[in-house]
Length: 410
Image (cartoon, rainbow, N blue to C red; front, side, top):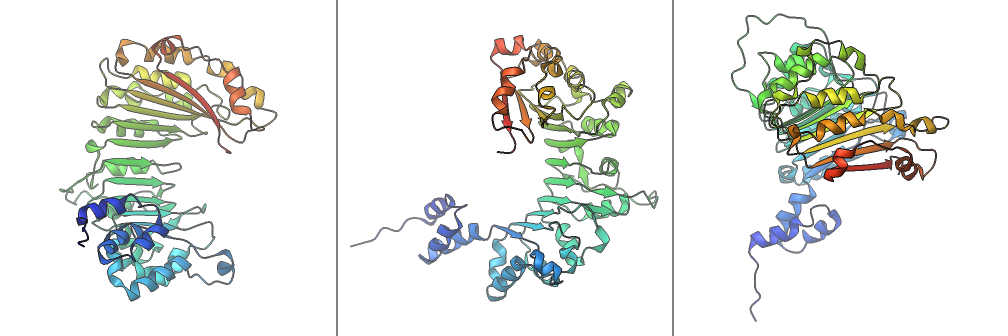
């Protein structure tokens, strides 16, 4: 009896469906040689390196169990390093930066030469100076083969140091920056030639509490980032509207935009800006998706006039298809009834009239969400939707409006 042998392509395709089931993939890797390689591809594709346990930090034993485990595996089977394509390094809440004091991490990183996505995530309040990072970690973060890089809670002494960091990232497609600080300039680079080869970035995320000097660095003639190629952009704004407006003007290929207005944003200051320093969405003719997030309760000024002004800046012909607006509402007692006050959203009719105009002829859906933070009861969301009455006749008539509320605690 002849046993049919499936082509390797079909075996790979079948095992691909198990990409997130590690126990089953481990079993598959033991079946036969043909199943081994595709199983390993998913088993080792994404690796997370966790900080030491709290009791280890107290005893000043900075060894990370996950770093030690991966180091042990690669010592016995170095070829497995080629399967690691995504690396996440978690710093945790420690007052001591274990990534600086962990020698095993420094020895491990040079072996992971095939990593394409690297995330350095830190939860502590104090940033780590870039210059204090081990040289091995600096080289990993500036690897020329990285396609996606996410870094948080780092500090750079100057724009020159940050631009030097970007210089090594020659293949980036996604760059995410969160809680990044940059000091004042220390040098004048007039005698330095401009960067000839630029990285055509696809996605840029400028997260909360990130220095606005990031924008000026990206516009620098010595920046390796080409802003005109951006297709997806996310910015968290507390101030410095004019810098972000300049960033939008340069992103002519933008298709998706997310704007997060932080709780301390000053919308009155935005109204006082010159028209040339405000957002002008007519410069982004390819924009298809707009998402805006803002807080209602903790802000003294109604954000809906700002949203209306933003929508009014679109060109008369645009391709905007989806608008997603998210309110983060904080209704703890005794402010619950204030949160449910429908007058907070009385200006929504202006937004409704703008979006229903011929300018937005390609608009398909407007999704309005209320994210109820720390609700006093589990039934707040349905009550909220009953009490808050949005005056939105035009969008409702088109069947384009979707209104939802949810408890973030669930």
